Image (tube, one colour):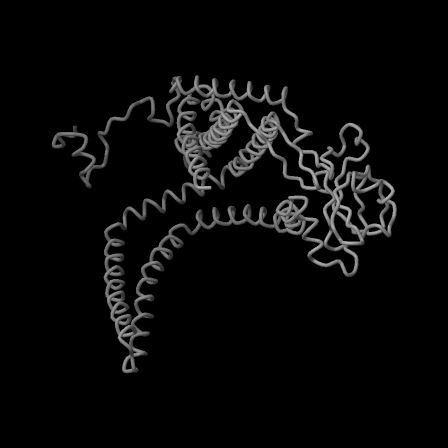
Length: 438
């Protein structure tokens, strides 16, 4: 190869070799391989078997699940609010008796949004329906309706003299302390979420613009600033030692100064080595800058690539929501014992078969989640590769996302399934260790 070059390896290791006689496979000379074949068919089969098995468990859960028994609140007698004879009373409210401020769980027709809002209750063995209409029997308070079933106290609509202990007792009785806190945080921070989202989009565009026009300047400034930071830290430590020199010191302080001095020497050595390596790697850094500029060019010339993470996120939200619904249905297939005396924590007895099905659903969730992410990453990869090899100074290049979709499902579904399978196994192992730890 090239006369004096005895092998491909020697040619590529020669810094003066220009690659003029290097033979490239004609199938990939102008971009990704177009004559493609299916890969890892065994993983494709496993993935579809997993999806089919998941569909069977979901059907089982839908057929045998008892979501009402699991999700509906119960009154002080263990009766489900909004079910059977209590169909007209779907909401749970804690009646706070005036006499002792003790909460009584009752099912009501509506949540009282204000302190004086009237309501009707079904009553229990400890509370009569007429007691809910007697304002002298209980202390009224405004509520927030959560999950269309729970009347949680509104901190801004509590009566005067309503002490914190009574409030905590009511919230604790629901067993939804964290839910209320999360709901309040979301409501109060909704504008912050929107601003943060669009800020991230804006920063991404600004970063791409800066990389496109100032990649070299930014990279070299960052690299040099990192080295200068090492010397600056050494200087600060050395100055600290000189400032305390001559002062009265204990043995421990003296020993600490010795360690600091050694650290200063080490930092100076690291700083020198850093800049020596910087000089040696000058060409490599220049190549990295060119890669960054190319990446930013792809983003700026194909803005639609920025929507890919949002599409992936929307699909992941859809899959996660569907999975959570099915998982809850499957859990509700167990034997559910309703609490009494106003508590909302329900005891669920699961058979071994249900436990295995729940673990399988968890595994399927992670596998599909990782597979979705892998597919969208592959789509972007295909688009970038095709653009890179078809882009010239005269043409913008072809950035095809649909081609990536077709290739991912038609040819490389198995490879993507295999990689996502490995990640799903890791996720399950983490869950197992977390479960053992607790």
